[in-house]
Length: 303
Ligand code: HEM
Image (cartoon, rainbow, N blue to C red; front, side, top):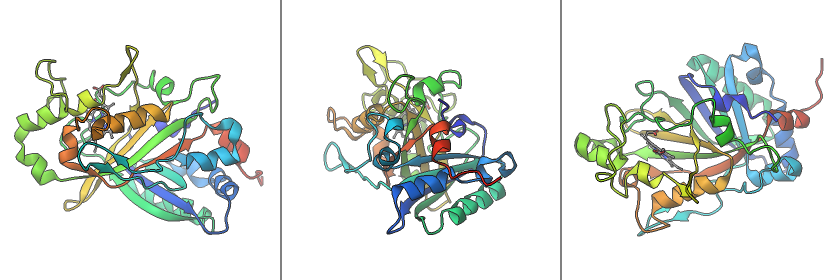
């Protein structure tokens, strides 16, 4: 079973993310067939990587044998400590086009929409870009503790022998940054919020690390084992309105949602320091099926 390769394709500076909803009267099968039948962006001449995902229940309706066991929509707002809230804004499908130049990403994303005309309509569009190569818009290096490409497939994909083996579950969230307030903290204050140093991304020593620090909140251990995820975040937006397109893949939904619950303070009342400066505007989960499962749903080849 082959996990969609674009999930692991590093090094692309330009990104576009679409969230789509079914047009009235069209079926889950129409949508899956339409997406699986995309030609240009899946071809070598398209010059981009394409990753696609579906609302977990929609995918399970079309391909029940290829559905990960715990995959489920972001159906309800996540409530945390105080009045804190992460909104649920689930849609029917998710398309991520990534490439080496903006023209290729623009043209291929337009061709995706043209191919799906009448089947699905756009609910949200985000253009992503890289800030200082590997930093997010907090100014910190993002991805230091990410698994390497040798271990990422074992973390991002459902293990062999389980329902939906090879598929991946993605959490897609748009986080708006209040950069001016974040900057007013100064470097030391920011490092305390993040739990790492800003210049070289060293983890703060245990006796200095706050329980509310972002990396402390997101170090998730169950029975002594650390549950990891594979993050592919990028920056989005312009100078007056910007933030992080948070894109994280995992073999189960539980660990992703548990990290969010920990960030929100829903588990122990301790909220992630970042949540005072960064606001989640959207939240959705999608099942990214294997290449083989998608190919089975594709319309017959016309050649
Ligand atoms: C706008 C939102 C976010 C920003 C700017 C951000 C940024 C960062 C940065 C700079 C690091 C430290 C370096 C690294 O290991 O990559 C980090 C670590 C991490 N973040 Fe986030 N993050 C965000 C949201 C989230 C969310 C929503 C989750 C979970 C659902 C998450 C999970 C993690 C994990 C698992 C780590 C690694 C922790 C460790 O093992 O040390 N992050 N993040």
